[in-house]
Each structure stands twice: as structure tokens, then as C-alpha cells.
Amino acid sequence: MMGTLHKVDKILLGCLLALAVIGMATLFAAVHSGDLSVWYKQGVYWLVGLAAFFFMCFIPLRFVGLMVWPIYGLALLALVLTPLIGDVHMGARRWLDLGFVNLQSSELMKWALLLVLAYWFSMREASTLKDVSVALLLMIVPAGLIVIQPDLGTTLVLLLAAMVVILVAGFPWKWFVGLLALSPFAGYVLWQNMHDYQRGRVLSFLNPESDPLGKGYHVIQSSIAIGSGGLFGKGYLQGSQSRLHFLPEQHTDFIFAVLAEEGGLLAVAVLFVLYAVLISRILMIALRAHTRFGGLISVGIATVFSLYIFVNIGMVSGMLPVVGVPLPFISYGGSALLSMLVALGLVMRISIESHGQVSWQRPGSPLV
Image (cartoon, rainbow, N blue to C red; front, top):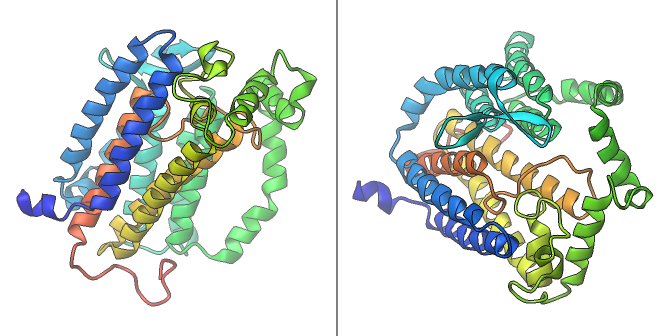
């Protein structure tokens, strides 16, 4: 046990603990004038999540490989049950009430899909139509179930992260270029099958001032909060947009605006540095991994974190449409936080097992 702890990546652990402090402090600023039970619940989620994180540090990667198909099957079952018996929040049926936590089934599937794709391509290259077809089937079925919840943001993150894993596993670039050529058609089909509120979010992104009290309200208020923070911010617990509750969903999707208003550009820069170190460290672990399975898992997890950060900050600052994606380790949310901590614990386990070992890459491999 002491040997395992000695091999822990201290930079990765330090980034995680720093993000925990910033996340809890920002969440308190977002809810201190309202419902503090949200803050206490997040504290419990952090304690449980950190316990799960350290637990994953001791789980052999070989055992994880044996469990990928049962985990995928469980996640698929949860997605099937969600539209049947799931709880409805803000017009969407995305959660299963397990008593001790509301499980967002799409969160479980996102990580389960990465695991099963990493396992599938740990023994084969993504260069034959048969192998790629199986991977695409594993992607499309859960993506379709998540879309009907509806949860477009998580669907896009799931598909993009899965495609990155497939590319790294050896997917031919000429095939990838061919798929890109079909993207306008895919975009048309997506637009035709969007809900009215999702189309409204895209249109309000293009011109938020056209409906400042309706669909454009979120982006306008968050932009005001971010811009008013200036260089050093208004001071902790002094943000007018958050304190007076002008910011919608300020403890979840729009919590970045709270941080920017109260901490200014300085706090945003600190957050960006922590995220940059975290992602680069995960990718470094992917390069050092002594098994193809571990390398592909790490790449997938780094991609999910990167997409979440990019999409959340992009939508809060008005550069992307609002799709409802959490800011990693900062936004309130039990199932999202727990799943991210378990995923990061798995990365730490990969780092521990790769300590002093030869990396898995071969000459010509996409990760070399």
C-alpha cells in the first residue's frame, strides 16, 4: 500500500485538490445568499468522490478490463430506464433517483463508452471496417438514447470524445476526411430533429439581443458578470450579478461567470493554468502508459475534460450556444463530480502501474 502511495502523481493530485478548494469557494459564493444546502451536499459529494478516487488508485487495470462490458451494459440499462422511470428536472428526463444520489445516466455512459472503446481497440487497430463498425454501433446506440432525454450537450461530448479515441487507435485519416465531408448533411439532420428550445438556444447565440428577456437572457447576464469582474474582480462574495440572482443556473452551468465577476481575470487565469496542467499531465500519463488499454483510456478522459472546459466557458462567455455542460470540479452536481473523480482515479492508477515500465507505443503509432 505504501508503495502505491509513493508512486502517486503528486502534480495531478495537487491540481485536483486546488480545484476542489476553488470549486467549493466559488459554489459558496454562488449560493451563500440562497440555499446553502446545495453547498453542504457538494461537500459530501467531494468527500465521497475523493474516497472513490483513492479507491481507484488500488484497483488493478487488469480488473478494470474484465469489468468494461458489465459496466457498459449497466450504463445502457440505465439509459433505457431513464425515459421510463427517470425524474424530470427543467423539462428534461435525465436522472434516476437512487435514494442517496440522483444518477445522470448519460454521465455513467460517457465513461463506460470510453472504457469499452479503449478495451476494444487495445487488441486491434481501428483500420478495418469490421472493427470500426462495432465501435460505431457502441457509440450510436447510447447517443440515440441520450438525445431523446433530451441532452444534446452530453451527446456531442460523448461522440467527439469517442471519435478521438478511435482516431488515436489508428482510424485512417482518409476515412476521417470522408466523414468530415458529410458533416453539413449531419448538421442539417441534427437541426431538423432539434427541440424548439434547442433551436432557440442556437438562434439566441447568434443574436442574443433579439430576445434579451427570453432566450438571450442567460448569455447577456453572464457576459455582464464576466466583463464587470475586470482584472482583480469585485471581491469575494461581492458579485452583484450572483448576489442579486441575475445569473441563471449560477451554481451549475454558469458558475464560471461567478468566478470571473468576483475574482476577475486573475482568478480566471489561475483556473486556466490548473486546467492546463491537469490535461497535460493526463496526456503525459497516456504517453507513459505501458499498456495500450491504459493509454487509450487516458486520452479519452483528457478529451472529455477538455471538451467540458471548452464548451462550458464558451457558452457562458457567448462564444458557443448554451447546451448545459458542467465546468469540471467547479459546477454543482453529484453524479458529474463523482464520475469525474472516479475517472481521474483511474488515470492515477494507470500512472502508478506505468511507473518505471516501458510505454505501449510502437513505431508509427498515433501517440508517438
